Image (cartoon, rainbow, N blue to C red; front, side, top):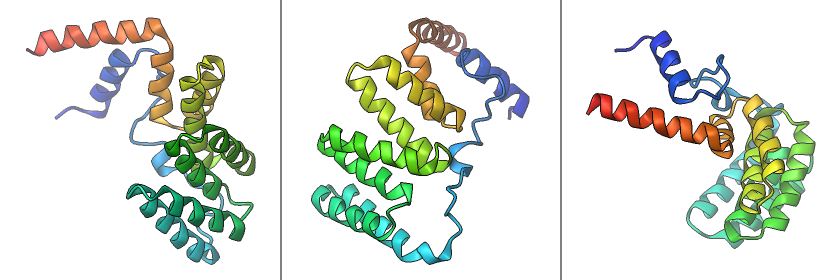
Length: 177
């Protein structure tokens, strides 16, 4: 079994362009939104879970209706916009998705889980749309909030880092083969 130090050394080797203080078991999974402990939001959170279930089963129109109800009930809560944006993105309605992501980032003040997820989603949309500089800014902001996904995307956006990672992985694969 490897120690925490061994894991950190391997992380630096395989991800040389990630920050040295990165700790993959912390970050977005432990991040809270400002309203996470608010018990009055339990019905809204239950409605959000219904919307997520509808989206996971491919019923995007039902999911959009549910998330619109969530937003109507809690218009200053970022997660409703973030979740509805995900459905818009899955449907290929990127303009609507970006509008909701912008609103989620604005409402969250750029902090918390919803902001981090919104920044990652918007970064992906920008990247797919060829807006690399905008994507990089969003991934950097999400990485600063602790997103391992965003950090990985930043490495992919850096061709030298991607080549270096590929070469190191080949060396280690050959070493252990």
